[in-house]
Image: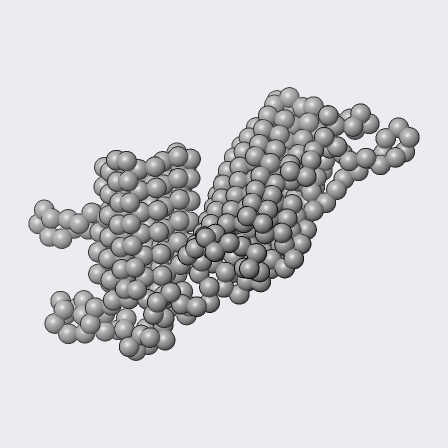
Length: 414
């Protein structure tokens, strides 16, 4: 139990709603606004879903089992809060102060935690004799870890000295994160983008790093078992690199365009199969219709607004790639890794081939965990046996899509 000298104020859902209404008026500059001060409150099990509580103060409060799905908590003070088992899926916590927070069992899948402060912190209060004791003295060090941050954005976050025991960072984006002296025992960083992050003096016992990106990362790999390093991406290219291309990419794209316009009579179709193009390539707005990229490494590559009609990119690594607003009609992505890829407002409906013929987009057996399809046209897409765990399908047109055998656990829909 919490110390007797701390008087946690309990609010009803109706009372909380009134506080949030006033705070939203405050943030919008409307009359009747009042910044929310929810420090030392017991808010167990209450709902904040899809509300705006940016800059609110929750210092030392209890938020166990609260519903904060889609809640905006940018710059909020969540110092030493008890957030065990809190549902924060899709929440925005940019630049929030989460120092010393207890997050065991909290779900932050797909949340935006850019620049968040998760360093270790402690909050003490004076008892009746004037002696200091922890604000949540019932919590153990294990309660600092165990959070599910899979697919979240933690870029620029501060985690130095943090306790993140047995936490799940699978497929998260953690660029330029400071984790010095953190206890990461048993944590899972599978598929996580850890570019330029600092793990100096961290406890890495039983850490899983499979498929993670560690280019420019300071980390002592000798402390991690070889089996838990399987498939990591380092500075070293996977197969051929841009240096092995027959000519500069801009010339290859020019020849590809000529090849398309001449119906294959001149020029040359673009084929980057088995190339690692993570460095120095930006395909945004490019004409890539009918390109080939089998078994290519294209992690994080930008294809925004590109023309990718009937492109063949089977079995490639396209995790965290950006396809926003791209024309992907008839694309072939069978068995491709697309975890955390951005398909916002992309066009993946069938490509008309003339007459009554058309080519459907094929994403069968693709890995699409945490992918963002919001607002995308997915009409008649073949998703058979694809893994869409925690994917965002809000606003997407799924008319006629084949989801036979697809994994849809945790998907966000309208």
